[in-house]
Each structure stands twice: as C-alpha cells, then as structure tokens.
Picture 1 (cartoon, rainbow, N blue to C red):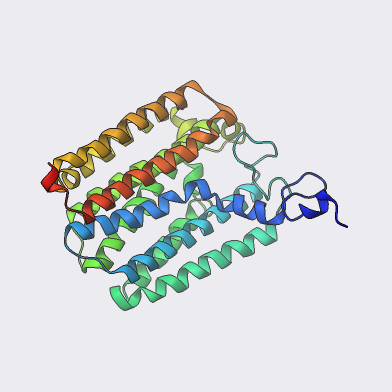
Picture 2 (cartoon, rainbow, N blue to C red):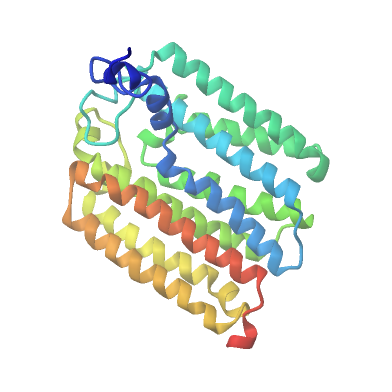
Length: 313
C-alpha cells in the first residue's frame, strides 16, 4: 500500500522539491500569459467594430501567441541561468533551472520545441495572410530570442519594456486585425499600443521587485537604470494612456460602456499603491493581478465590440 508521500510524488519529490509537472508549469509563467491572450483578443475586438470576424485565424493567432510567449519564457530562464543572472532563493517566482529542478539541456530543448510549435502554427496563417507573413514570423522569433540572448539582450539593457510594447502589443493586435480584415488601420495601432503599455506593466512589476537582485549581477533593467520611483510612476501612467488610446472604441460602443475603463482605472490605481507600499516577494501577487486586470479590460472591450450597447446610452 502506497504512503501518502508516494501518492503525491508526481507533485512534490521526497526532498521537498516541486514535482516535474509543477516545475514545468511554473517555467511557462502562466501568470504572464494574459499578455499574449489580450493582444489577440484586442485585435479581434477592433475587427468586430469594423464588422469583421473569422474564428479560425483568430484561434490560430491565439495559439501562436501562447506558444511564442512560452518559448520566450523558456529562453529567458535558460539564458539568464547560463549567464549567471539568476541565483537560488531569488525574490521572484521559483526558477526551475536555477534551483536544479530542470536541467539546462531540457530547458534548451523545450525552448526549441515551443518555438517549433509556434512556427508550424504561424505557417498555417499564410493561407489567410500570404507568404509575406514568413518575414513577420522571422522578425517575431528574432525578437523573442533577442530579449534574453544575442550580443545585446534587450532585457539586460533597459529595453525590455519597449520590446514588450512591440511584441505583446503592436504586433499581435495588428496582425490579428489584419488576418480578420485584410488591412491595417489607426485603430488597431492605438489598441496595440494600449495593450503593449499594459503588458509592459507586468514587466515593470517584475523589474521593480527584482531591483536589488538585478543590480547585484549588473542586469540593467529599467528599474536599475532609472530607479524604482521612476518605473513605479511609469506603471501608473501606462494604465491611463492605455485607457485614453482605447477611449474612442468605448464611446463608439455606447457611452454606458465607459463604466468598464473607469473600473479598470480604479483597480489600476489600487495596484499602483500596493506596488509602492511593498517590496520583495510580497510583490509577486501584484504581477499576476496586473496581468489579470489587463485581460479583464480587454475581455470587456471585446464584449462591448460584439454587443450593441448604444440603446442603453
């Protein structure tokens, strides 16, 4: 008869380490995946306001975005470990390679597999967007790798937030919209910039929390270069700019829908106050809450874009 410990061996090892399934799920950084989801949903929302919707390319865009982000997260963990930037017992969430839960070789292979899956999904989108999407895909993969690797890793040279705005905002929103409609517009650019700024706030929380650890290993994040106070104010400003950029979409859906961005801003200010009042591991919940708040904002935008609220205005 198995003991209770044996029954739980798939979740936690006898030495107290997380089990294989748990460490891989943690390596995917599920708390940050709303960034990918939000970009695709925002692109669909803008397309809906233009009277377009095609569920299959939208679904493929979502799967591509998730696979690419997971691959980027794996790559970030592998290269930060390889270059000695992650240390055991760090303030942030547990890093499987650094803590010895995942071998560097296994993480390197997982990165290749995730990017390979994303590439296959991306190739299927050629049917709707044309062969020129191959160039866009190559640019996306170069960006995903250059975030953590290469001669000028963006995340280590105070360029991480800019990369996030481009690759989690402008690109997913713009290309999802394009694959729905066949063209680009100012609206998808504005929505993409809004999603990018909200996604950058997830990274800001991460860099704000890890300021001391990053400074110790000379990892030049925006928090290290500009200071915690500056990035905290950037966090607050990003949320307000994001709402301003999408204001036209809310109004066109019916003025009654302005209740949603109002609620978002109230919650956003509360999270900013929490950010300023805490440090270290106590900021871990703020990272997930920032991501979920963005996702809820975009889901609300998608709903109001699909449903006519003007009779209630």
